[in-house]
Each structure stands twice: as C-alpha cells, then as structure tokens.
Amino acid sequence: MRQRSLQTLYSYWNEIRKGRLAPHRLEIEPSRIAAILSETFMLERIGGGIYHFRLAGTRLCDLFGVELRGKNFLDDWSDADRRTLEWVLTTICEQGAGATLTIEGVSDRRNRVEIEAMLLPLLHSNNKITRVIGAISAASAPYRLDNEPVRARHLRRHQLLWPDGRPRSVIERLGSQAPNPTPSSAKLRVVTDERRRFRVVDGGRAGGKFDKS
Image 1 (spheres, rainbow, N blue to C red):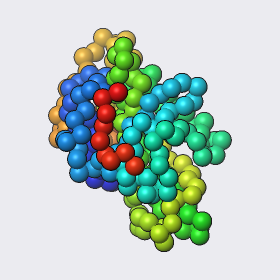
Image 2 (cartoon, rainbow, N blue to C red; image 1 turned 45 degrees about the vertical axis):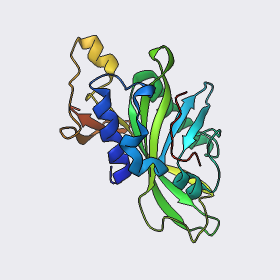
Image 3 (cartoon, rainbow, N blue to C red; image 1 turned 120 degrees about the vertical axis):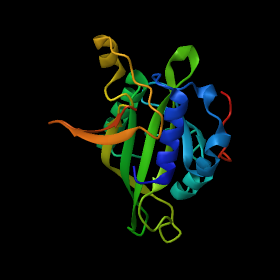
C-alpha cells in the first residue's frame, strides 16, 4: 500500500476490528479519518452483482466526473474486469477478506493515471457483511488528467488481504485463536501461488460524512 489514504483507512479499520472478522458499521467514526474522507467511500451489497455506493467523497466524484452515490461499483468495467471484481467483493462479504486494487484510469485524450483502491468488510444487519468501506487514491501524476475526469478504467492488479494471516474459515476449522494485532505491529507480505498473488497482513459527492444506515 503506497498511498497514505489507504494505509490510514486500513490502520483505523484494523484498530477497531480488535481481532474480530470485521468491525461493525456503526463503529465507524468519520472524525477519526477526517483527513481522508474526500477519498473514502462505502458500498452496500444488494445482491445479484450490485454494490451501490452509499457514500463517496468529493475527490472521488471529481476524479470520475460524476456523482457516485447510488451507482453500482461494478458498472462501466469490461466484462472480464467485472467478473474479477464481483469475485473479489463476494470473497470480502462471505469470507471477511480485504482487497487492494491497482487501476489504470484513462481520459478522453488518452492520458493515463494509476489509481489504487482498498476494500474492507463491515458487519451490518444480523452481523453479516453487507457493507464495504474503501478508499481510492491516485498513485501517479497527474491526479487530474488535463482537467478531464477518468472516462474509462481497467483493472491491472488485485490482491486479497487476510488480516489474520489466513481466511477466518481456516482459522476456525483448525481451532486456532485469531491474533489481535495493533495497527503498528501489522506487517504486509505478499504470498504467491500458482493461481494468484495475495498480499497478507501478518498478525495483524457525499460531503465526506457517514450516515447511520
């Protein structure tokens, strides 16, 4: 995670998680992440491949040139990217993973910008993961593409995050106790297998305001 916004969000999320699968939606205090609210968003899992933006910071709306609230996160991707992202979001909501994405954004003039995103699970009704909190930040200049918003985006890389070092289902099956790291002690490492790469954590225009729904 190269971007400060992503690291800030992860550290806060992991702090309030306290070793659980995920923190509860109502535990999120916007004042604790006030410095990055303009790059923060929240999704609601509706089902059937629909993940609506419930909230989206003003900087994100400017970057994409549209009010994101109410739109489906999975819209406007290629078919292949949409399938990958739907799998990522399903894994987040059903297994409690987090994820990082590296995205190439393109304007009408064919200017490009690298964008990084993070997606993290939140418990909501019935203690199920139906909310996803995230942050998006430009990882390369220019942030604004000659004053043009991003018109197209392409998923270049994706990595799953297992905050406890392995999927919670594996921990429960083995009867292991999940560690309870502090944000300062959590370290990232990348694990490679034949199918995909995982980044693993060892031990560990909406006005930028979150509503309570």
